[in-house]
Length: 97
Image 1 (cartoon, rainbow, N blue to C red):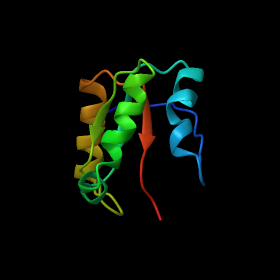
Image 2 (tube, rainbow, N blue to C red):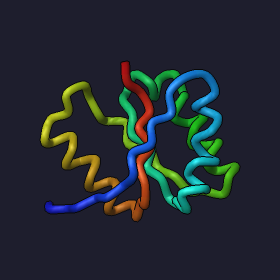
Image 3 (cartoon, one colour):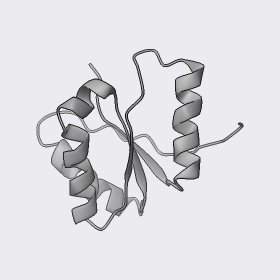
């Protein structure tokens, strides 16, 4: 599958950043973001809290939680497939070190 995705990179880091995500997406005219995270963070329900924040702002979002450190081609392909098939218009990466 060949796909070209162009999205402006905006990094929000530090205290209070989590609470600003939905507002930023609305400002960028995003309507259907995909939250990209890993299985570890899914256990802590943080992605679900973010999804609820987006829903409260009127956005419809999905979650792809199968990513890994140093993602393989198979993981990237799976994420792209979820993005395209879900009709998403933006990505929100949740995690990092």
